[in-house]
Amino acid sequence: MAVTLTPSAAPVTPARPVRDRHHRGVSRWVVLALVTLGALVMLVPFAFMLLNAFKSPGDYSSGGPLSWPTEFYTKGLRTYWTEVNFPLKFWNSAIIAGSVAVLGVAVSLLNAYALGIGRVRGRLWIVGLFLLANMLPQEALIYPLYYVAKQVGLYNTQLSVIIIFTVIQSAFGTYLLASVMSTFPRSLLEAAALDGAGKWTVLWRVVFPNLRPTLAVLLIFFFIWTWNEFLIPLVMLIDNQTQTIPVALASLQGDRLMDAPTTNAGALISLVPAILFFLIFQRTLARGITAGAEK
Amino acid sequence: MAVSETVAATPPAATPTPPAPSRRRRGRNAAYWLYLLPGAALFLLVIGAPLIGTLYLSLTKWSGIGDPRWVGLDNYQHLLHDDVFWASFRNTVWMLVAMVVVPTVLGLLLAAVLFDVIGRRFKPRTAAALRAAFYLPQVLPVVVAGIVWGWILRPDGAFNSLLDVVGLGALRHDWLGDPGTALPAVMAVMIWVQIGYPVVVFMAALQRVDPELYEAAEVDGANWLHRFRAITLPQIRPETFVVALTCTIAALKVFGPIFALTRGGPDNATNVPSYFAYYTFFKKLQVGYGSAISMVLTLIIVVVAGIFIWMQARSERRDRGF
Image 1 (cartoon, each protein chain N blue to C red):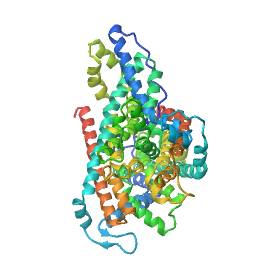
Image 2 (tube, each protein chain N blue to C red):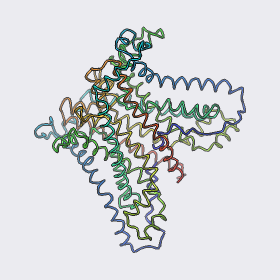
Image 3 (cartoon, chains in turn yellow, green):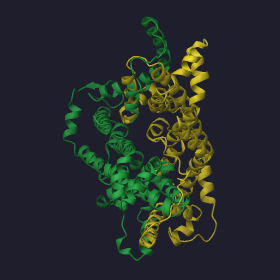
Image 4 (tube, chains in turn purple, brown):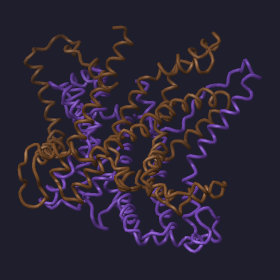
């Protein structure tokens, strides 16, 4: 699972001399053409999005979705930006996803330390329980969470969503880290114990530095997964002040308030942070995975 | 995969050093429980208690206000005769086709072609660029993907305009509004969303396969299809399990795209258990009934995951020759 986000780092297999050249000469081009065609089909919706995000409503109604815009129209983009109060939604999404990423990794680390290195009794069952928790449909939890959040005044606060996703994400993190830590070199731990280091010191001075690349990957996954979550934020966050980007976009769509250019502009803006984040951290991900593989 | 790793890596005698007095050792390990405490408390609060709460509510009739009224198994009995419930599970089977079967098969084929043919007969960079194109939809928040596709498939949307341009204007259609085409349209969107995940995982998996295997097979005169079946498939079976399991769970739980594309309509043609439960909870205010739907879905997910993990363990045992 940790390998899902590394589209760079191409396989560097040196081109070997092709033995049956004339036999493969044509068919390899056919294969390339077919796969390229498939890739283009994948990109068509993004092209539609770009084409219509900068088109005026008048242009759209006269020329339709496929026409080339007669002017570079940015009002749809600006309307969306101000109507939705995009900076606030962006901040909401970022604060929720960022907090969940950090807290989720911290909780996973503590859990996994007890399970993978401490090897407490019944750890297999506990790890299994965490794994199961990560697979549960959120509908099986949502109503009691919603009800209790209302009772204790956490409804419609980002804190409620942060707590819930910290637990859900750390369930997966615990499972992953416990399995990584169970292969941690015992000699390192014993050397530290001989030097008189306590468990807390061993965790921060020995285990944590060694697992940093894996923790970085986990952090990024938690961030992206939480950023894209929908059901729980939809139920828990009901007003403009607290909503995340996907919820805000979906509720606008539900109100049928947006014309086609604004819809596309909105989708385009919502896509940008995810792509930027992805590009920025792509190298961290690749490094983390390699570090894990070398062990 | 990681489950069996945990199993293999936990021999009872973990310390190679001279045996410490056993009571002291147990005492030392017990101190680790402290580290599990915050996680366990949070876990009980956010997952354990709500799950039991939903189980309890599924045995009651409740609108969310006042006190729940105990009705025993009535909700579950009602489910058995509810056409919408059965329709939602029938649609789940189609979601499994669109989100597991097609992406896994197509992903295997694409990854093998990208790695084996395009990565080697052309430049590796070409393969990487093509892979990025297939992966791009995975970066998009699924709800945003749903909203964009919802607009593309509208009667006056881009897809119908495209049909006009290529001279197939006769096929113009309200793709998501017609009960006959809504489900296939949603399935097509889900394939588009999902395909990048197996492609990327399988391509990474192929890098770990020893190239000499392929070279030896080529010398023996095996053609591409032979090599695909005899080498590629068995070598990347662990990844195939992981992809199939994670995609299956995702398909059983699918909510966001349905919410954004069709809200389960028209006429329940694209309803799925997850959306059905949400609608029953928050629109119809039948909390007990919604809880029963959620519990059935939970049970199915647990059983399916259990079967997967059992099959995986068995296939790994067989590989080791037991």
